[in-house]
Length: 130
Image 1 (cartoon, one colour):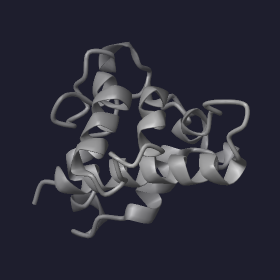
Image 2 (cartoon, rainbow, N blue to C red):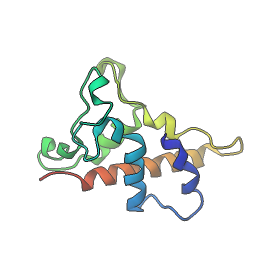
Image 3 (tube, rainbow, N blue to C red):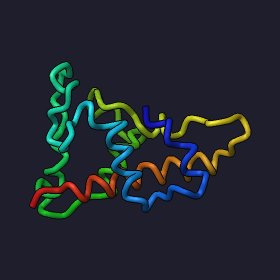
Image 4 (tube, one colour):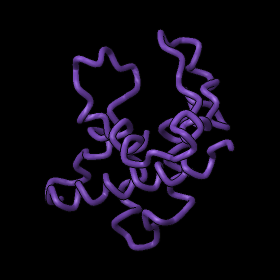
């Protein structure tokens, strides 16, 4: 579960810009459905009603530009409008915003969640096929 990494962000040794954080987030949160290489062929893919997206073709399907803001919104999931239909993909924004301890401030939770999502989005940018 992605929440396991959240304490690392507050310890100074791992930053959102750390390329390993994005890969680790992908492995923990995305790989089971989207597969090792992001092609939508993970071990859980066959059990889903809707096939997971091929994450290596995001830029290609957007005229060659990687839509980081849109990808961030999809991962976060809290802003998705209900009229757009059912969503099998977990709302990672809710999971990333789980409180680690009772004294954790909301502003720190938001910064941590933003850092995790940003790192994941940056990783997805690196796996785009030309």
